[in-house]
Length: 170
Image 1 (cartoon, rainbow, N blue to C red):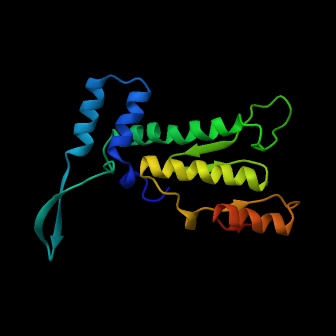
Image 2: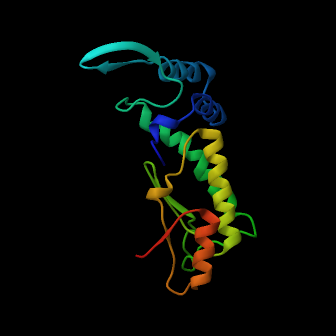
């Protein structure tokens, strides 16, 4: 994600908390905590005016990592729901293994799927929808597609076109 904490929309955050079953009192308290920040800019070492933030979570606030993880849970659940669609070609795991379609750590994510254009388009659509509702943005400069050596050159180029993300080698 690009500027992960800075881009979280507050209204989205309250909807996530509500959907996860948190009480209105706690949701209101969290909203007041994240939305009541004023900032000042130093110009030549002197503070110049104040402005109020309109979105984002504060760096260094002990509550921010938890809130960010709860927000990211929306994307995780969206990717999991893709796996249930029959047109989604998932990454084959060994027999008897837990099926995995993504791994996440902080604001980094690895998405696993078969190198099939329709599947990659479905993932791209899901990521765009998450961007629209959350305020987050996928950082395409820091993103990459890694393909098995057996994937044809034509399919590899089609994957890049379908996602807008460049392919890299292991």
